[in-house]
Image (cartoon, rainbow, N blue to C red):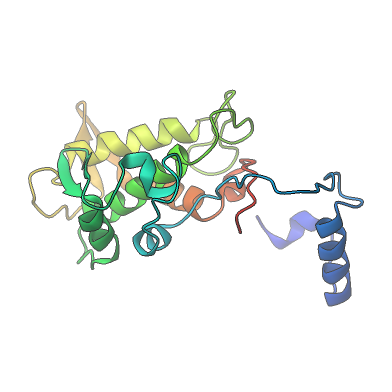
Length: 202
């Protein structure tokens, strides 16, 4: 999004503070004020977050969506490690290996999507599609699957180093970089893709 999309409005510090106060009260911006405790809906998180937050406090949230504890094995497109080993992988240097770079974003998006509610219109369900970028018109699940196919056809599963973003998938040369960039955009800010993914844990 460029600066010319806001019709010349430039928020002042006061207007930002006022909007924040109004938002907290649910005033004037179409968000109802809610009293009492509300179950958190997890915001998408980056690979770095997942590496540093081994949370198993709820069996239906966080890392527990992939298994009950850090010793649990999880297979990702032909490579199996324990959760603890996956967390180490997420912070390990990629050393230019394109498959390792893709796998970090892929694992993060698997965790992010499994931590979203099943009924998630505007974000991951009811045909919600990406509005901006190379994969406009696709769902984030479709992009995740394309990235997974790229990963499965790369040097990832045989332990070799993937030096190029181009991989043969079904006889076609597929550029993995825009797939990786789209996963990264979702993990950082789904709104940058035009997806509406409400959350309340930040």
